[in-house]
Image 1 (cartoon, rainbow, N blue to C red):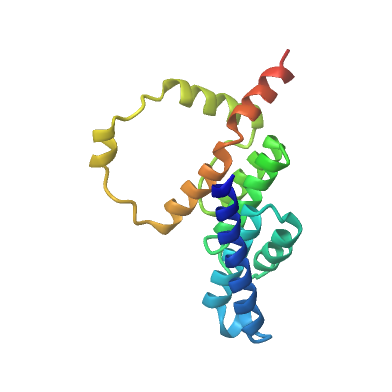
Image 2: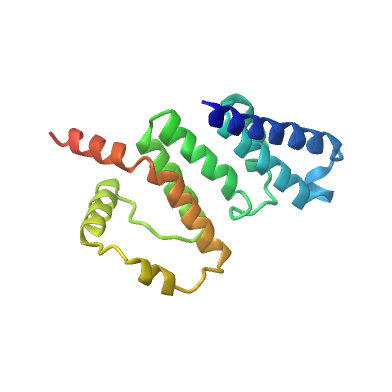
Length: 174
């Protein structure tokens, strides 16, 4: 219990510092202080998600997502929180999957459009996958492509929803 309280206090402090930083930004922050604004807004979205203040998370997240001059890559941290919110807290795995695929497509990943085909390909891919050993993982080169890192972050955000989605798909066929 004490550990949870400590974690909450850390995120609460993070929110306080980020709010203070945001309050110091100029009105034209997205034009003149783009990088600082993006960092502070992304940070506060993650912190509010972590302390389950969903309304405030959405307010700050929506502001980031509305910035047309930001790339999808720059918006990934907010998308990741939104996917985790929808798939985890709201328990809507199909909606979270749709969100994930939409973001991944915007980042350049390609997927079949047919949802049944998507599910079949994903399940057959999982079944055929041989898990790598620790040595295999240690021998991999460090990923330095920012877009691929962002795609991985989106897929990890959705990964908690996979058991619910598989159950939902399975039940819908019987």
